[in-house]
Image (cartoon, rainbow, N blue to C red):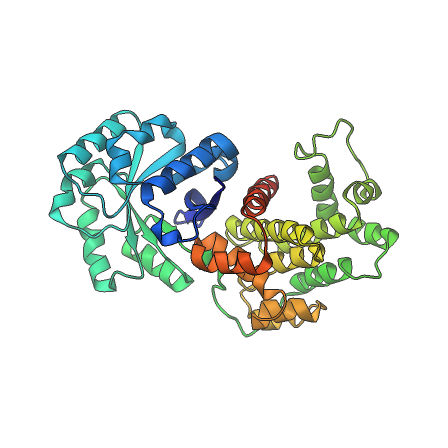
Length: 399
């Protein structure tokens, strides 16, 4: 059975990665809502720990995994190492004596416990004393209720995690209320849309990205342009000599790098590094997510015999408005990109927009919408899974 594993970041108060929640879909099922939680979790565990490797999927961070009542009662979490996993207890688990006993046993063995989509009730008191993290849906819970809930839960020895934090305003509100961790896509949205021009250094990087992807640029021009930026040259040579390529002999020049990566590969790498410099003051997950999208769509493009370098740029620029805290219309308007790219990024329509939907819905675990995009592109489950895992490893190799 093909298993799709997507990951969603969980941040601390400094917007640094604390953990990832792993999301599941089985490639065998068309009726995603009908997949029971037990099948989902066991398939995910098998894929993550045994097939792909939890280190690769979780990038060395703690991973949150949902467990049903039956799985907890059957002691299934104990099959896996406690130092790698947060046991997330689903909201429909009944906090009866057997569950409390099984959770107490997990705690004794060193496992961390989280209560998912929590709504306070006295019947959860025993589980609250055992739990390390309480997850609260930030959007579905009224603000007045949130304040009272935080006040009540702070009496227990646990941390609070706000789920579905989708804007910076919500993030700041959650911080103000006393939450410790934050899950959602606020980090990939502009913090403030400022009515001011981009800085000269930002414009320089945007010009570099545009020039490097210009069709008329030859190898000599590429090498000369990159050589003018010491940090770009350093990162390029560090990358091609990294363990990702397992080279026996190091490469020491830009020309060697171009020869090794190929012209398109070289252009994509320099675009990636220049884009990462645009987001230096943003959460590290923002550029990591952009790299994952870029590599994922590049591979999809190659598989479908599309222009893979164009799809690489599409993935890379999907969150450029968040990197620069500017409207995407303003930024993309300053870049000599193809009309197809502009249409997909700005108008969110056109020939390439289906690729945006493919990766957006995959990341969000919106499996019904994802299946629609997947079928439209006629790409197999196995390819999707392989491309995403490869993109995760590629992105993490830049840390």
